Amino acid sequence: MHTSNFSRLHFAHLPTPLEPMQNISKALGGPNLWIKRDDCTGLSSGGNKTRKLEFIMADAVDQKADSIITQGATQSNHARQTCAIAGKLGMRCHILLESRTGFEDDAYNHNGNVMLNQLHGATISTRPAGTDMNAAMEELAQKLRDDGKHPYIIPGGGSNEIGALGYVNAAIELTTQANDRSLKIDHLVHATGSSGTQAGLVLGMAGINSGIPVYGVGVRAPKAKQEDMVYDLAQRTAVYMGLNPSVVAREQVVANSDYVGEGYGQPTKSMVEAVKMLAQYEGILLDPVYSGKGFAGLIDLIRKGHFKKGENVVFLHTGGSVSLSGYPDTFDLPGYI
Ligand SMILES: *Cc1c(COP(=O)(O)O)cnc(C)c1O
Image (cartoon, rainbow, N blue to C red):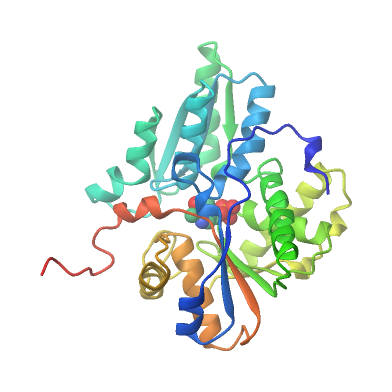
């Protein structure tokens, strides 16, 4: 697979490390757990949107954009990483934040990603939960065009066939790292949301015939809808790359939405346990919205015997710990003693 046919900027710290997690593997008593550190991609404290943005922002530059519009939930990590790179490239960044969770507290609405968006110089406006965010972005784009600007719209999560190329590359990168150390990866697990990460991974793994199955732990949509979104984007990305969409088989797209809890961004007990476990056993920070629920799914599946002792399971850490400061009361933390 050859993603070099597409314009790309290079600002991610790659390859991201692939590290063993011996302490937590021992504590859970199941498979050998590894972590692929896409929380360490470098841009504005890192995360999975950086790989997508290398291709998306190259397209924006090719199209001579002078401003970027994107959208997400209030604590969107995608928004933060987009603001950071837009500023560096000298583009204005307009962020539309959907009040998707309904949380009204100050920390959630001003700390974490929201604060960093502003540090990066973005213009932020909010929209009520349930707003048609694509229509809202189009409306803003029209206003900017009327003012003589050249806006470029990035879909939520950077999940289109351009952004997914970043995760086609990540699949190749991870497979190469495993080969270099003679590590046989039995499963790759990660949090899946707007679907670009999983779509790119599934396509990349299929395209190089790695045989590594990808398992998405959903954070929002029910299983059937999540899998449809991923499958659809994986096929569209294949076509965009000039491949036959049948390179991805439907059964290679697997998502599990049993760990969403009450909804997107709503804390769950298992997420709290997962975030604390990784923080305390491995010194690694997950996040409440995505990677915490993804790892909670992995813990539960290990306890249920889904992943076997002796297998090598890689958790893709997609980042997001910046949003922890938007959830100060979620973790039942001790005060000073
Ligand atoms: C966006 C995001 C995800 C989900 O990735 P998608 O490509 O949107 O499915 C997972 N984890 C974190 C921390 C994210 O910000």
